[in-house]
Image (tube, rainbow, N blue to C red; front, side, top):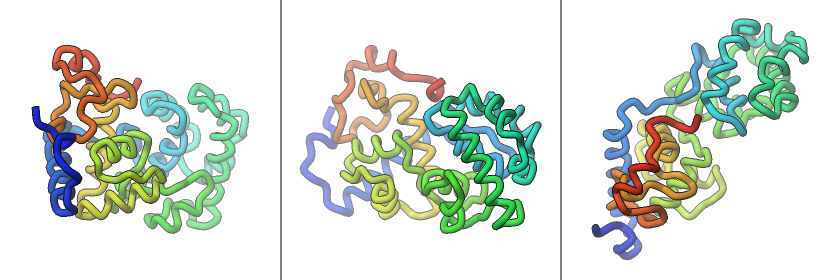
Length: 239
């Protein structure tokens, strides 16, 4: 199979075309791609995204009903006893640091924004524990404001696809944003994250079972035999 790895460095125009083709194929491959964190409102999404650091979405989703059943609003969470919060989110790891973040974050929402999650990147990143990645998750999925979420999967795939050589998340965000229409940014993030969790693993990617292999310069980093590669494919994200 002829792949992008066999071609010379692409021009800017061909890079854009190839990138958008990959995204279209990933959209067809993962028609249900979405944020895998459960949430009912912007505050819940902000909190669960903060909690998802160094753990899995599935574990965060498991504690979410208890957490928001007890503390459904920023005001309630800001006033929560520290010990109670630590007990609820204990299974997620780093629970002391995460409890501190939730208490400070909730208090900041109450004090600065009348208990409402602000729908602007510049405001979100001023909140305790909230960086650009978290802010873009909230903007794209709670407010329909396009944003690129550069997590470990997105950054890895952007480099494997040859879209950028940058490693700094902010530089990756800007570099990839220049290749796609702004309206596509949020779904692009979901497509790459889903693909990274299911096929294009950090170690041993399922190259022989990859729907975008022909356009990938990194084809061959994992097994190219279809049978061997199929065994690496996950039907859902990391447990």
